[in-house]
Amino acid sequence: MSQPKTIVVGIDGAHFELIQPWIDAGKLPEIAKILDSGIHGDLESVLPPVTSPNWKAYSTGVNPGRFGIFWWENIDTKAERVYYPDNRKHQRTEFWEIIAQDEPVGVLGVPTTHPPKQIDEFLVAGPPDGKNTGFAHPDTIEQELKTQFDYRVTKKHRLQHDQTAAAEEILALIDSRFEAARHLLSEHDLSFLQVTTFYINSLHHYLWDDETTLTAWQLIDDHIGALREESRNIVLMSDHGANEITTSFYINAWLEKEGYLVTDSTFSDLFHRAGLNLETVEKMAVRLGVRDLVDRLPERVLNIARRLPDESGSVNKQGKTNVVNWDQTDAVASGQGPVYITAPESSNRYDRIQEELLSKLAEVRDDNGNPIASDVYRGEMVYSGEFEDEAPDIVIDQARGVHIQGGLNDNSVFTDPESGGWRAENKRHGLFAAAGPDFSEGTIDSLSILDLAPTLLHLHGYPILTDMDGEVRASLFSDESGLAAEPPETAESSDFTSSTDGNQRGDMDDEVKDRLDDLGYLS
Image 1 (cartoon, rainbow, N blue to C red):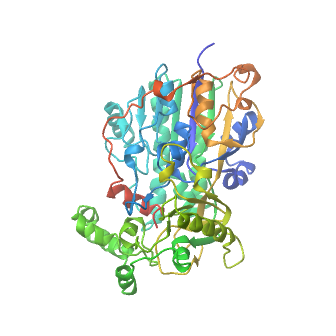
Image 2 (cartoon, rainbow, N blue to C red):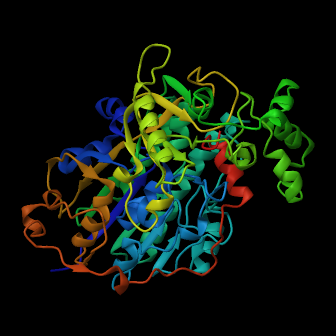
Image 3 (cartoon, rainbow, N blue to C red):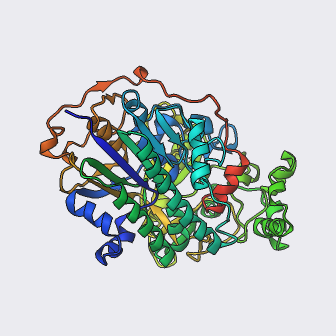
């Protein structure tokens, strides 16, 4: 049997909730063809439903407890620090590395793949943690993309300062992703291609169902049509979904009011009352033409700047380490769901605080009486593996329309839905659709993002790693393919090594933190 040809199109934050009306109106005809001729359904992400860690969960088939990245920040209560374990991004083997051992593989645009691993034929790292240099393996691919497409991994314009210019740039970046992918596909005889577009979800967040968002989706739709061929399998997937915000919940303000969190906010309060905040300082730097110099200030000066509040008075994660009074704090939270308890896990105090928070968070209602959580989980119910002792102690699954803000502030617990700049928030259910000679037709229920790595490995005839948390979903395959009846083979993860380039940092650098803050993740 000949090897299958597969293209996976990753669309960050995609879900039918937003695009189904456009599909029904005939505005996304290529996606409609895939839904009509193939199989589709909701795709459940790991908690919290965020770009990081979900793209890593997708590519490895394991839950975050096995790779140790739980959001865009980890909170280490023992060391009293908030950080991002950047060095862990490449420690796990990704499924396309296994395929690449025997078949030509190309990967382009996937978040959390910078710096690029060494795979054949190529890997082009994606935003928002990627950079505009050193983003491709081999180096010749990077030069080729820059020369032919003026290719950039990340955008220049800031959504919080110039939304119109940023949105126009995002449209150009989406187009260049697919133009580059189509070019490389024509130049390389690939068995497997993964092309992912990240910035579409920034449009979801800031513009939701705006005409610009539709334009972006129509660009994606056109490129999907150009990528389709009868002999190829094509898979559409997302890391999570999105829905319109109706409530913004400042969880750390709630923890502070409930007596679980104590902060030393005198510094930030003083500047907030004086009208001096991150936005005004950054806008001033832009006007003076010295924005790039700010990031090169001495570390002691940057530490002070990180304690400046935003326009709402909130201090984001870059200042969280310095503002939390760790000695008097029982719990502190990140945005979008994770909550960490400071007491030792083996103590009665830990058990008491966890039980209280589980009960109280399940009962929190907004000003209209709507719950902020669809469910609240103990960390051990969500995470397992070698890093589970570092995992959040509680994880909130946000209720529909709820945006959990993770900044530290002295504001009310609930604010105007658009107070943080976002119109839409991530949700756990994303999108899956597949069509082609090896896929079935109809719909599928209860599909996890963890299932995709083993399923795609099985599609290409490779063994499933025994420590993968996902499983092969045989019902996705057509009877004619023979894959549904073929039992998957297994292998130990130790049989495969992840091909890092050795250039791994221990924490996220300030350039990436600044970029994530602009996208609204750290506010």
